[in-house]
Image (cartoon, rainbow, N blue to C red; front, side):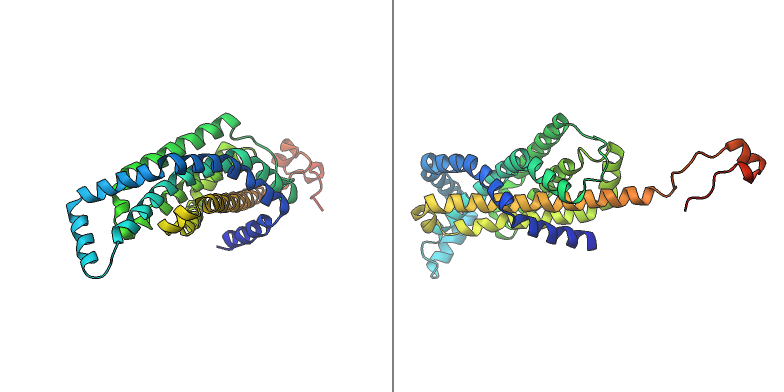
Length: 292
């Protein structure tokens, strides 16, 4: 708990640095083009498709008709944009995670290392290729989980539970690997994964919920349509900042845990070599003096 909280506040402080704020604009430039293009070409057609799907679901349509008859007028006109928004949001989140990992991750890792962990030896337990394979594989697994669980998102409570869990798992997998790839050996990375898995997964779930917060910016369908040009860049920039914070939090935690692991394993004082024959014979005169 202490390590998690310490890393949390350090990540918050680093996010306020001008360098990090500027780095957060890089994914924005790339994702802005994607989001605006999708909104321009597919926003209305996507709403029409969702409206047809909801209309074909007899049970849900009956519930909507009953609620509209009892005062919830135009409920479907509000629900359709919300379903579209909450369906598209995970894709934007995944794309932002990839952008942060590929564009911001190395710079943020270097920033933390230069300020706190220059003394850590480099054991190169992972390469750039293995990091890319790990990130792509984890992302594909998360996308598959999203597709499989997508029907459950139409149930209101699960809509706010399943996506953060998936995003949190993905953040945990990608961020920890990237943070330890250069400094930790494979055995050290596996040991840290086993001993800290619970806390790392909790951090992933917390950041998963944080990644869902910008969806509030898009919560009103009418407002989204009227202020599309303003809200989409704002939401994507918030995503970039959230994931920059996520990368910093996992980097501080992972490297501090690695530092602690090496400190615990370094229980033998390295000094002059001991004359084994003298030690076996009990001749203490030939033994080196104890370290000061």
